[in-house]
Length: 444
Image (cartoon, rainbow, N blue to C red; front, side, top):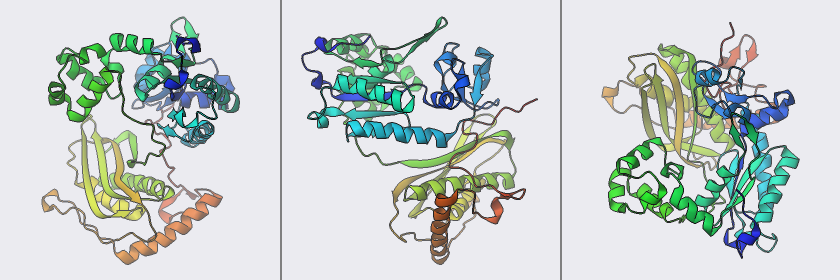
């Protein structure tokens, strides 16, 4: 249900917008292939270990949703079209999406590729009111990008995000119907939500937190108002308990941050067939290291902490990390660290997933890389201690910059290492896996 301007004397009391593109990945695929329009379309891994990342509303009618196993999704919808995903294309549309938002206000906070918060209070002199601005940006996204979106208009982030979710299209077994598109959260609507919403709808409350709250008798948001914050902190930690207590009163102190720095960069792969031999594991880790290192260099970042994550056939996840006393962005150096960590992990079963994540990021400034280090300082871990000399790293930095420049100008696969040759062709790993949501289904 949308509200009209007459419901409140001053729309400028609600200057925060949350804009969310509808079924973004799937929508881009349908735009590029109009024959898919009206069909149940998903983006995800089509194999038995695949997962759904995005589902069109026609697919959602059958109960298909994101984060669902693809094997389950196919059982729910026999006509389901599962596409592997093309991040380059999604990033292209995302860039255009954020450019449109930047035309409205400079104070925008991206939340991934397909959603963002806007603070219109800094643009009052050039905008009529937030409701008209919301409708205008939604029209631009449809006209210029061909993408539908939902917009929540509220006085803070909490209510704006709740509103955008309710402004989206509705779906049922009978079909898909258009949503409100723009939903304005008036004081009356705020009060109603605080009295009726389930606690699981609050930001930061996932299934595990919901179960903890249920053990305290907290099922609805209104229940939170009667729980002592100290008691809540004993079960959830002080930071989350403080936030939830604030939310229960309808308050949200978070501001729209126009600049958000990346906290980590990573790359993972789910194998079609589980792997156990060291050579295959090392080859995969070096491939992931190349992807992560190039992503770091594109953003002019160095990483000080390296983490290797592995999941075995019993779905047990293990990880090992190393914090370095300098930052790195070299794929060879990162590969050495990752292999030392990965091969030292305890493995009793074959691995179905393997990945590298780097964190403690810092801006790259000239030749600030110091390159003498020791990994596996704990002898009991049994890991090797690779050392990379300062001179080697400096030489590699110059070479990397030259190669990166050539690839930017002429394409990723025009230049590479001899180890990247596959059957006479150069195979440079993309920024993400060719099958980012799990392996593709093998055709019979």
